[in-house]
Length: 327
Ligand code: ATP
Ligand code: LTN
Image (cartoon, rainbow, N blue to C red; front, side, top):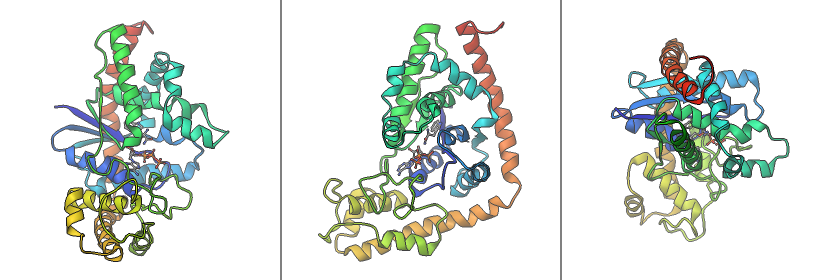
């Protein structure tokens, strides 16, 4: 059975974008693949974090995965920092990655250009991400489009390593959602809906209450044409709402255009809000039950045990190839 793997950083509240880009994809694939879903907490500390909040968010992430429909009988769920092999492998991969190729990562360049006090970790984090993927021989990595370049780096590192040392790593492929590869901010629809946003005004959080969700969607920035059709360039706001509706209803963009061709923006926004509320209220109901149960620790213990065994084996193979240690 082929393996899929992805993770969502516990660096902020998970958003509708995180759901569409990663969690929903995992849920759709979990029946057919050996599925690994983890909490990349080491990635969260590439930027400053409050330690108490970080700890809480790690558990919240897991509760949200389950509430969204991730089945713990079909998924291996674990916390990155509890498995030391990720960071150990990352170091070896760093020594097999060119400074130039790491410098080309657009997300890093973007973040670095906005902030002078950035950590070295922010620069090397795509290599840790490569280790997260390669240590488990993952075949597919479901992510939003913003992470595609990082998965491509993991592919390059794997290929280079294999050329030098033999067939050690599976070369992974990114899986990008057909609809919703990048959900945009409702207030600034040319920018990604991001959990690192300061105000959350244009960001739908998975744990937003109904009133807040409706308010955010009803006040989404659109245009003055009052006609509902997809045109990303000229109508980014309406196009984003069409994508959100299409993704959550599993309809195509054309189906959504047809469905609302005789409606005005107010009516369309209300339908989008109804659908988002329906989706998120179902998730939230489950979320609070799961958070108050003892299932999370049990799942994480099992995940840690299982992934440590797999990672240790791969790591030892790598040590041998590179000539490290005594084995
Ligand atoms: P940030 O929102 O702070 O930029 P991030 O997206 O880098 O965070 P995660 O929450 O770890 O960090 O991302 C989890 C997954 O969700 C990734 O695969 C990412 O590509 C995807 N994702 C996040 N936001 C969106 C979005 N707006 N549209 C589609 N996919 C998204
Ligand atoms: N870098 C990703 C999170 C992440 C990840 C991974 C995703 C860390 N390791 C491995 C897929 C596979 C992010 O910032 N969203």
